[in-house]
Length: 389
Image 1 (cartoon, helix red, strand yellow):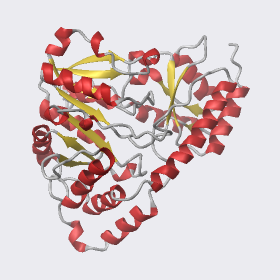
Image 2: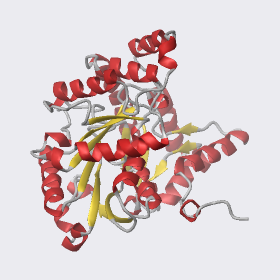
Image 3: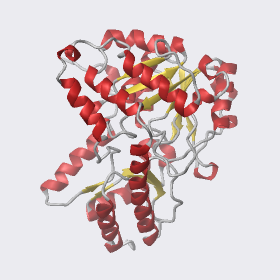
């Protein structure tokens, strides 16, 4: 008797679950594994966030169901955050929706707005969840390539008009996972212009918005003129406040798109635990001091890793955002050969670029979620490898 739906049988396993299994196999062999694969922060949330969470756990009223769209305190905190950081006005009741982490929202949003067979524009390389979401709604994914020579910016003019005409949804992701690229407001303005012209939805996944190493604040797509007519933006507290395991995020923007997602979510979940939303509101209402210190730590790690990669002949420019390094593999190796060599001969796990789409061939991603001491240890292991085989 077959129990599994066809859409699940044809859904590839999540890459990082495979890595976790392989890591455990190596550990059983006695290998001291250094894992730069998954982007899971290794540092704790701010103390003031943990303190708020602890206090709210003692309130019996907080163990009731949350409102489906999230508590007002959190939604107002998101709206205030957007006004303070971007100058964007949001109605917390209609233009902000609480999510159980932005990944959940990404998958559910496509279920709420995309019909089977409709086209979804997906960046390549790009976050795995975008392709998985398209698969689950039986949509038609169209990979638009991002390349190094263009700074990993969308080349909108290279997407054929007949593709635009059948498009229902477009994913953008800046700052970018995996490429660590940043973008400018004019890119968002062009995306909004095209979305209006061809009548599709455009979203920006801004999970890494404040993990940056310059003084410039990365723009929001909602700063583009007329963005609320066609656009939404995902945000997450996983990275900028180290709250990954708390699973708290949000979507903001067009009220009709958000209403569609809220309708779906009210039928499949009951939002996030109230104390977590309260702690997240405290984080968003705070100043940028915590994030500034976090960026200082990631910059130290970035610089150590970039220096080490250059020492083995991989020359890259330090990324300006996220806690990832997107680098070319050593000459003479495919992505698969290079990442396998690191894992099998040095006990170092990095993510092959092909995990993020065909355009990732020839590249790999490093997550800077390990102390600088571990980074230096990994570099020493890389230096000892025989690169002549």
